[in-house]
Length: 366
Image 1 (cartoon, rainbow, N blue to C red):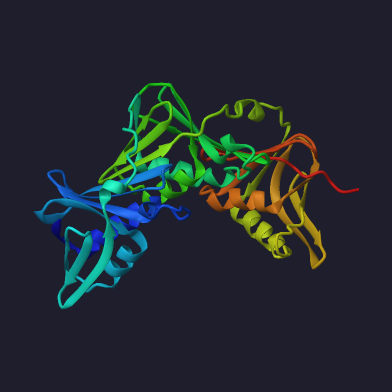
Image 2 (tube, one colour):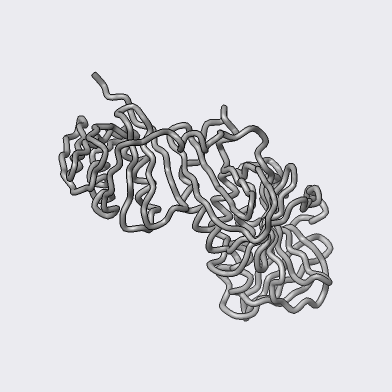
């Protein structure tokens, strides 16, 4: 193989594909990027056997076709330190990569790309289009609620539910639910749980404009966008019937300024020490919200204005759960819907009905 490619284009492709390189493996080949030059152009591919990324259409001059596996860390490090401009990459029959730019010449050991595991062909049973910016925003505003419990693998991903031209993306970790909604271009029905790790990396790869085509099958999902094909396994299992949790009657509601509540909760978090997060007590009255927290390191009390209807209530929460919601909320105000000190709080807002959150309260210590 022998190609010439610009440093900037190559670095962009390496940064994208490297997100699928395995960080925990005993197989050296899975720590590699596959460089491929041929009739379909210059491509870079990587996989950890659960998630895979192919960057294609990389602008390059191909002198000789071929394929080689290059250690992602070593290859990426070398390319980043090369002079700006054009880089020539060639290989020999022993899979040694020779990398040249200006007066800089590198030689690094590669591997035979034929050693790379053969992945099953991606199936496309159901195909759905969505605006890249919308998908990116939905993932950003829900992914923090993905569970981490190995005993509940289905909650270590987000539910993608598509029907009647709408998409619902839901994350549950046992203490809260995040629900984002959007519109899709096609009318079909999909129920699939996409791993949280996949969505973390997908959010970083998604462009700010254009369309993403989502292709679902029984065991795989593929996200196709400009210059990138991003594939992942699907988590098997039955997800939570999340709608029932949002249907409970909440007669008490409070509208609060998002920025004021965010600042107040951030001040409460200053009392956290190591992994210990003292609960925050929220006491809602007609026109006032009193926040308080007690911890071994100190205490805090604060009052902020609210518009409360339906009665008064005092309820305690893990402050981190509120902080996560507040930090992704773009709207200027939030509405907190409650019924009792031991019932969940549903957080939504009057400006945008596409996002809502459910947070379980803490049982007060006697």
